[in-house]
Image (cartoon, rainbow, N blue to C red; front, side, top):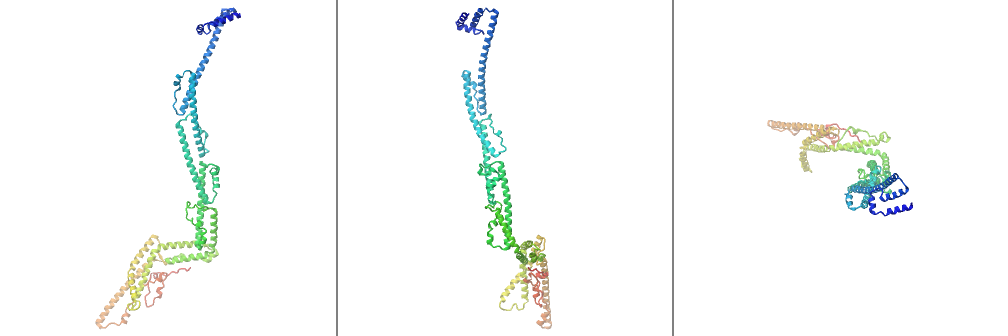
Length: 567
């Protein structure tokens, strides 16, 4: 049996290549059939068994063949998928980077087998991936800077997911957008840093003026603002806290400035009231020099520190105590000043009778400061009133001076020896000429003065009081008296003319002249309008005239005299 099998194997090996080529179309090669037939014949298998086993052999050969073909097809399909996937990945990467993708399939048609195509496309894929990796790293570097600056600006609002790089868009345009975003953030950071530095400089200046420790102050405001702790914070919270702190410091500065200026004002008033020597005032020159300064003008170190304020408060307290001890003299001084102002301006009111009793001040029944305030108010009102009355009073002075010259001229005209030669006669004649020229202007003076007073009263809605009486009333009385005087003069002239006519008739009848004594006995002395400068406060000149002369009439004689309370 073994010899037969060996012979069958030799027979199989002896088949020519042509036989194997022909038999390849059959699932069971011819050689295998021959060998199987020999074996089956020796075994004595029936034809049915032979056909069955041959059929099984054919099925097994077909199954093996199909498996191998399927494996080859699968391997080919896998290689094609890998090539397609690589092409798709290359296309996606190129698209993400914004670069044109070269169709690989067309270039690989001439590359030969699939293995060569896969090798070429794998090489291309590695190049594209490396390029993508480099660009992605650049994107991440820029994004890291953006995230860092954004965190510095808004640490509580930064979400890390917002700063993830979108790998689907790695184009040059996206890179430029990121660069612009980074540049914008860098500019904002620079502006914020400049703003913070400006705020810090402002706070430092405020701390210097207020006498505060700058380092401790900024630590209390925000821990990121201290240079010693690292970089300066530029977050919204830090800037807002800094701005709020500056606002509070400015408010404190304004409060202290107002308090110090009030103290300095009070100190100056006390110095002026008590005539404090300049040597003592120089000690507080750095305080008084800022009495009218604005908030921006006060920049000296410790100018508004608590030590300075306490020091000035102590000085004001000392001056207040000193003021209390010298209040009596101050009240007397102010009363005298008020009386002098009222006397100069011919002011008189019921307030002049106000009694500022020194005994009441000393006993404490009346607050001396209230009395001083009242006196200061009266003095201020008197000064203001004097200023408004200045123009009118100057014209009154000129009018009174003209009236005095008029009185003198009337006295001069009554002097029978006025033309006699004597020492100083020519000077008297010159004065008489000047007096006549001045007297001729009195009506115009009175008219102008009346208009001025009327305008003054219309503007202020009150009467112009002169030594307690209405100046318009005085002027009116003076005008009436002047008219009466002029009428009296006219009557005297008429009488004189009539007397001359009678004398002429007597001379014609009797041929003689009347004696001088008779002529004088029938002559009346006219009334004269005399004004004395000493009558500007009260009437006194009228009492000093001789009984043989008429009573002088002046503006002050038009109203009863009023007493001015002596201080």
